[in-house]
Amino acid sequence: MAASIESLLSEISGLEDPVEELRSLRTAVLAVPLETLKETVRGLRLEVIFSLLISNDREQVELCVVILGRFLQALDPHYVAQNFREELQMGLNHCLHSVKVLAISQIRRIVEHPDAALVIVNSSELLKGLILCIAEEKISVAKEAIQALSKLTNTTDGLHALFQSELLDHLKDVMGTSDIVRYRVYELVVEVSSISPLSLGYCANASFLSRLLGELTGDDVLVRATAIEMVTTLAHSQHGRQYLAEQGIMDKISNMIIGAESDPFSDFYLPGLVKFFGNLAIMDSPQQICECYPAFLKKVFEMALDKDPVMIGVALDTLGVLGSTVEGKQVLQKAGEKFQQVLKRLSQLAQNSTTELRVRCLEALTLLLTLPAEQQTEDLLGLTESWFSSLSNQPLEMFRSISVQPFPELHCGALRVFIAIADQPWGQKLMIAAPGFMEFIVDRSTGPTKESKDARFELVKALANSASTPEIFGNQHYLRLRSYMREGPYYVTAVSSVTVEGAE
Image (cartoon, rainbow, N blue to C red; front, side):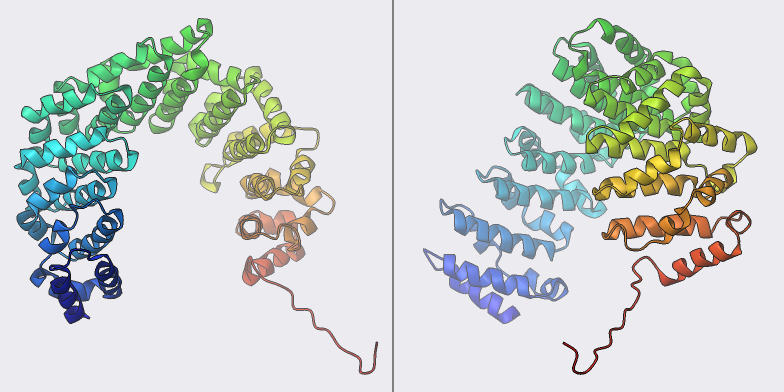
């Protein structure tokens, strides 16, 4: 096969219309295992294929992209950097986005390779071409360029090349192309800043971060909403959160939540403000965040009681995030009657709303009610039991009725609520006391999808593995659960049929 590839390359080099031969070459190249190709590719004349990229024949160019992608994948990144730098530069300047993506993906491979990265770092023309690709109309090209430049900055040399050389002015010029491109540059800056405190320092010293933070209070509400998303991403790292705190951003966003009440356009950016603090709470301390910024939790409760499905959805997700930790549960419990109103609202939403909101509501309730065995103190068990009881006069029956509705996502969502309470003694007592509930648990005929079978199995497993189940359920029911577990989630009872000879 290697000989066939070499023969096709030789044949192609002298043809004016090589499309048919390129098709054959593509088939041959893709048929050879990559490991085998690695043994022979260095001796091949790849410049023949590169030269064919300069053509108005779209099929010819696309065939070359596939062939080169395979060949280059078989080559060591350092070899590609040393031998095809001009070809990569040509690829960045090509009019077709598939060629640009090919070039950028190879540059990304190179910068991820320690021995090869310096070739790119020291090539200002290649880096300029890469920066220009951020402004490309095709988002796939821009995304590849952002990822390649982000990987470049994993080293001090790469940071210096991008943020302390003439390339910095080039990056700022590209940033001024449009709002869309400006936010692509911010995306790059946030990615780089998230790598380490050192990389954040480079971005801050180049004034990118202060400019991004200034966008939070701009006149354009859509720009503001996008800036909040970027700042939330920056807050995912510890050093990012520290920087934001030093800049007073937490206080600023808290004040924006308060001020949103008098802004008729706040619906565009308010969900992002709440998500920002929701992320902070789960990464740092729910209690600290909710105590330092009370406007946050107040707004979450208001959004849960709102009529706008967007606001409700954000509130549900945030309540789930807060309630997934013991500390968050305690914060919500301290809210007293206000949180009780929210629980009643969740009960209503779980039963009567759009399918999407009902599913998100069930997910939030699952997180609120989940309490791992090692966290099951008397106080916390009392807390989850009181929350469950406040949802309805018969909450167990409420969720069972949701689980039998003809929507797989609701069926699984309700089963996950049962899983959440299945290893808590009070939940087990409710289950065994409910008429027919044990049969419901082990009934394999309901929920035919794989997801529903898996969810039911997880419910059985949670009960069977709980230390309190044998005593609360009794030995007979406990053995049924263990038997279900041994059979697995997809067990089907064999039914034998007997045909009576002569029967019509």
